[in-house]
Length: 445
Image (cartoon, rainbow, N blue to C red):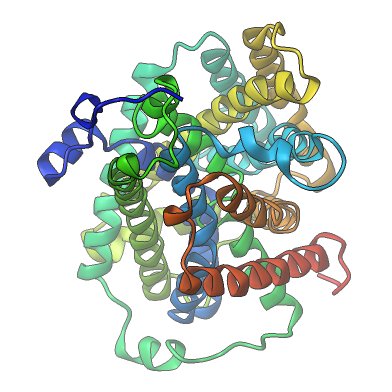
């Protein structure tokens, strides 16, 4: 191992101004994925069914799932790499975790893409002269074509603007048009039948999609490393991260990465709560359905701002959902193109060809869930989200394992964090069981 003087290393900007100028970004790319089906469809659905009690559901899920990404951030900035590179060290058959991750990013992300695209189509039908399936094909085909040739930068920026504008409208709208005192008193502490089929199905869906699946810890790892920040500098220089002289450097980068993620995470939660508050005000006790999703969502801001807000919600909701479709296609294909050569131990594979094949396969394969479930955007979201709660359980303990195995001792989780991880992972397993009950129709939903 070589030695590098401390003043030769690039430390992160410590001020907030410097942070936003130099380091902010990966969390907002992550937030674009989270502000999709969970916020635009599931949050108002749970708010429509349970009123303000849905806020507790989302806060609980966010609190439990936070650690899965926090562990990924520790690895990103503490080791200077993506957690997926260490999945080869997980106990069990050779490279099983890599193949499991590839399966999720191809097959299951195809289902997620289908569910979010179906909701996008439902909003687009407000103005589209085409049928549901025709509009769906146009939207998914266009998204796939743009990702295929990597020419969607301008469109993505436009969609981000609309998504952020929608976020501001939702927060302001929730403040301007809160639920009536009667609805607050009736719903805020009104615990539903926790063992009922309806609650288990909806909770499993929220646990799968809110804020998003833990597999995105791999995506945010890619985006974080793309900024060429953190302990990657130590790796490039051949420096031993166990050397105590460099621990303050590692500590500062982990702090910076966590700061970035916390902002995106908090932004996502605030928007989810705002949507629930609006749904409790406007929709409760009549949640959106497959037939009236667009109309119900369009009306969610009208009490706060008037009739013009119908179109603001339609346009903003469409932008949030469609940006998620694009990000899913891009993120899943890039992750697969990075992981497949690792799984096959063939560094000569054409990663760009793999990426394009995955994009095309996801676009074409996304039609399958529509054929199985039908043109039912809300039902499709709930079904796919429940499956996600079931299949993504392993990412949480996997990220913990690679952190414990690879980070220098001072940066491994403290006892308090470990207690939290144990409890959280057990709860995530329960979420998965609930997802299995919903997925396989054991409870008769």
